[in-house]
Length: 508
Image (tube, rainbow, N blue to C red; front, side, top):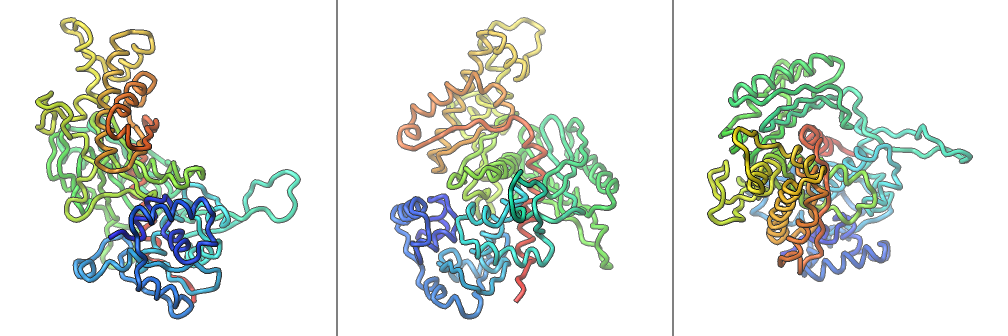
C-alpha cells in the first residue's frame, strides 16, 4: 500500500506538502498541487483514517508517534502498524504545541531536511526556508523555536546590506557550533585522507598517506592521526567521526564487509578507531561515534548537500549518483536523503559496479567475470587503451589522467578509449535506471576528467535502451574530486544533524 512518503518522493515535495494538498489544497500552489495529485493518482494513495482523525483533533493535546530519530523501527513496532508513515496532519497557521523529536516521523523528517538546508545555505531566512520546504512560515517557526532555544540554531541580521535599502536588514538562520569538530576518514584504494572540519564543512586540517596493504596498519595510522588532529584543537569538541570505505558495510555501519581492490574482509573499522570523548565529565567517558559508510553512499550524501545549496533544485531531490574511479559505486538519494536499503542487507545497496554487463568477460577483483567496473571505471582505461594500440615492450600502461591528456592532444587511440568507456557507462546506467526506477543520474569521480570525450557515447548508449525510450532520463556531470574526504565528513555531520532533532524539545 502506498504511503504518504511514497507520494512525497514521487512528487518531489515534502510530506507536509502532501498533507496540505489532501487536507487543504487551496493553500498550495497550483503547479505543486497538480504534481501531488498526479502522484496520488499513480500510486492509488488512500489517506489513513487514523491520520485524518488526528488532523481533526490538531488543536488538542500534541500527537506523539513512535518512530526513532534514525528512522529505524523495533520489530514489535513494525509488526504492529505502519500508521506513522501514513499520517496526514493538516497544516494550520494557528498556534499549536509541536514536539520536535524522533517520535514524530513527519516533524522529524521536516526538521532534518530544514537543518540540512540551513547548513547548506546559511544564513537563510525563515521565508526562504518555508519556500524551499513548501510549507507555511508558521510551520517553520514552530520547528525553529525549540532549536533556537536549545542553542542548535542562531538567528541574526545579515552583515550584508543592500545599498539604499531602508528598514531592518534581513534576519538569517545559521547552525551554531563554533566549538564543534568533525573528522572524516576516506580510505581509498591508493591513498587515505583524514581531515577535520566544522559543522559547516570548513576544512581545518588534513593529512594523507599511501594506503598500506594491511588493514590493521591502515587503521592504526588513521587512529593516531585522528588523535593528533583532535589534540591540536583543544578548544573544540570532537562530535563524530565519519569513515568512507571502498566496499559494502554492515547494516549497523560499523564494519567494512569486503573491499575487493584491497582484499580486506570483515574489518571492524569503528572498533579500531574508537576514541574517548575527553569533553565528557562523567566517570566513564563515552566514545565518540564512528560511522562507517560505503564511499559511493558517502559521495551521494556530499552531492545531495550541493543540491540543497541551489534553490532551483526543488522537486528534483531524487537522483542516482554513479561514482566511477578505481571501481564503480552507486548511491541512491530519495527526497534529498540517501537511501541505504532495509534490514540486515542495508549496507549492500549500490554495489552495481559488480553487476555483469559482459557474460564471461574479464575477471574482476571481486571474483566475478564481466563486472561493470572492469569496463567503465577510470581504472579500466589502461587495459582498454592497450587494446586500441600496439603496446611496446617494457612500457608502463598510462593512468586515466594521462589518457585524457593524450585525447586532449588529439591522439585517436586515447579518444577511442574514452568513447568505449562512455558506451560501457551508458549500458550500466540504463540498467540502474530500470532497476531503481530513478531516471536522474549524476556521474562523479575521476572518470569525469574525460567527460568531454565520453559523454556523447554514454548518452547514445542510454538512448538505445528501454530506459532511454520509456523514461524522462537525464545524465549530469558531477564533481571529479572532493567527494572522498568531503563525503566522509558529510557522513559525520549528517549523523550529528539527526541526533540534534532527536534530542530537542519545544518549549511549552
